[in-house]
Amino acid sequence: MSGFTLTLRNAPALRLDLRGVTPNALAPLSAAEVERLSLAHGNAFAPLAEFFTVAPRGDGALVLQGELSRCDHLGWQMNGGMLVAEGSVGDYAGGAMSAGTLTVKGHAADLAACEMAGGTLVIEGNVGDFAASTLPGSMDGMRGGTLIVRGGAGARFADRMRRGTALVFGDAGEFLASRMVAGTIAIAGRAGAHVGYGMRRGSVVFAGPAPEIASTFVPAVAAAPVFWQLLARDLARHGGAFGSLATRGFDRHLGDVAAAGKGELIVVR
Image (cartoon, rainbow, N blue to C red; front, side, top):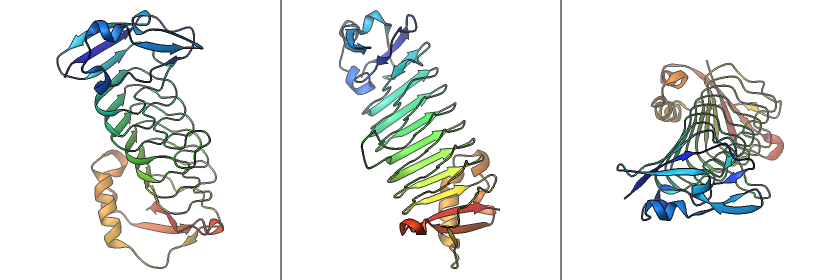
């Protein structure tokens, strides 16, 4: 498999859509064929070579370099391989990806990992609003895979999340895990208001400061030591504030009972 390094010539004047620029899609192509790929720029289309220089590489990875904050849909529907962005990126990073590893060595804007179904997305900086959530007009958010955010997250993180694991090493905005259906979320920093609003199922672990818990969540009566050890050890492999979870106590709050929910907010002591 062929790999490529795509270096942005200049910051695009309008939003640049990178749908179709994935490791598996580019692997069978020559450098000349990659240069001729058509990208949406605003409401028009132009060849990829107008925006990027293309250099082959031997490791099979796809690496993007430059100021990519106006580049949207990085890794959209990615189904394998390794993709690295050496800088901050725009909206929809890792959206609907099903396999492979996508690493963003900077920040990602809104809707990162929306409807993600598999693979691993690592964002070294912050993410904007609605990460790990739904596409506009859809009913299901993140559906599988692993999302790791080394920085903080904006509002509505994991809205309508259905499956998978999402970790945030910094703070999260308001309405964290709103309308969550299933899956696992772990937060190392502070969480904003309205945690778990409309939550149906799933687990949210707070490894840092305790959040404000709504009255529609009730304290759990039954202990769950075996479940906690399995979950804590799974999260511990990511290190940081999650590394010591298995040795710490915890309190569970169940809800959102206003939505007949059976989810749990786990506050680590």
